Amino acid sequence: MVKKSRFCRWLVISLVVGLFTVAIAGCGSSNNKQQSEGTKQGTINLRLADVVQPTHPMNVAAEKFAKKVQEKSNGRIKITIYPARQLGDDRQLFEQVQQGSLDMAEISVAPMGSTNPIVMALQMPFLFTDWDQYTKVIKSEATDKLLKGLEKNNVKALAVYNAGFRHILTVNKPIKTPADLQGMKFRTAETPLHVDIFKALGANPTPMPYGEIYSGLQNKVIDGLEMDLSAILMEKHYEVAKDVTLSKHFTWPAILMINTAKFNSLTPEDQKIIQDAAKEVIDENVKDIAEIEKKAVSELTAKGVKMIELSASELAPFIEATKGVEQKYSSQDPAIAEFVKAARNVK
Image 1: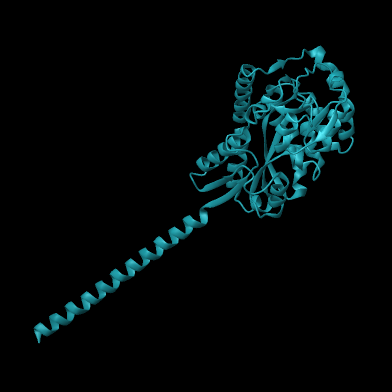
Image 2: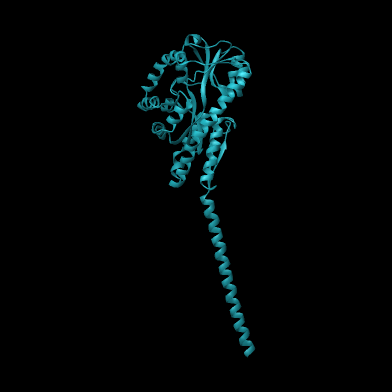
């Protein structure tokens, strides 16, 4: 009887210990599952697209932005970049971000002008004189206020990045005065502002897709165009056009943006991470461009391209000829006029 009693007590204790162990294991498993789900819920994956090649300064800026966001969020926010028109051209990307089918994009200002004219303020002729003035303006409250105007398009603008100052490239005809452009078949981007600028300078603007420029120069369909130095080098335009006038008539900006609903779905902390990272890249983008331009001048010169630098007095007639264009577009929206005035006051 004693042995049987001891055996029963041992059996009861074993059963209790076993059930307790299973319960603890179950709780541990449940906690691990909850932690795993919590980590998964805390991870944010965003898609960002642009139209330029991976080595282009604007895509480099996008990559730096994505890296900063990942670092600031300790890897919790990951941004995957789709360059080189993988998800569409500028207009298509803008529509996708507005609709929310794409989280983010970096879109050139020129194609956006027909949808929201205020962005044309960033390409008013001869608005920016050098990278120091440009940087001060782009990081100012004037730019922040201008970009708020994009909110009606269901996007939140985060920063403005750039590809460089634009210059005049011609086929064997140096351009030193607006009179030299008279009647010239001159390729421009397919945007009214650019057409108006070069019409004011006396040229015969010929809108043409980017990919047709080389053959257009080669076959004398166009006599010249306006382009940034790095593109002239990368696209090998120098092979068929040998004269560059360093006019710096405007820069080629792009706006980094995010769908408004997507941005509002983030916590205030995550919103700040994204906004801070976007702003921090501005200085790095400008530094990259300045180095690229300096290198491009050296390489183009070595390839036989003649660089024409204009003095302030030589540039003055170009500026004077395009004042009417600035007035025309400034009168279309008070936001444009206000931004232009603020930018011109920055030294």
